[in-house]
Picture 1 (cartoon, rainbow over the protein chains, first blue to last red):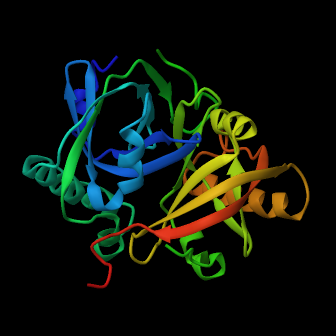
Picture 2: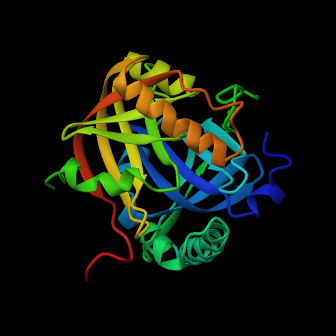
Length: 150
Length: 138
């Protein structure tokens, strides 16, 4: 399912992660950085921005990750079980910082200044959340949006 | 944490970056997708454009809980709204106003053929807060 994504995720793809909290309440946060590890997909989460999502992930049975290109709107949503919620690491924080710099440059192409992007990010402890996608959906705007691809 | 007042957050509904909505299906599976337009309705409600997010629409009719994330255009800060689906509208002033805005967005994106407003979905906002960021006061 993840085959063919490696080149795409090297671009500054927007990342959004969601999980289900007790009481079937949705929790979501922006992710920073994407990694593929075989059949698993990992994204970085900044602890300070996602305390509620992190709490939900600790008891979640399913996770959704939306990857959408901010310039082309080409999008995919992956759903599957949580494989790992790692401890914060310097490597994850560095990856998130690098990703954000690249993402802000992409947004500059649609007219956003660095000042208009700065509030998206918060430097600090960052960790990888890793899922094993079992379903993939089309998220590109249009009549096929939401269609299951695998 | 106390909730921010929706009336003071209208600028967050006027940016170029799309908002996000997360929902949960009856079986507990989460879904997260982007929105074309979020509009201020009154001090307790926002309206979302529904063109093609059928999974979201299905989910909130089974489980009305939703989380909407908006981006403040001047700073990039993310505003999180915990909300509850109340109703959809397929005609009337709110629908026509939203349709005009969606038509304008579609034109900018050169997607006039694929952006067609089906309904305006109205949500009650239960809680609003900004997500911590690098631009927060020290």
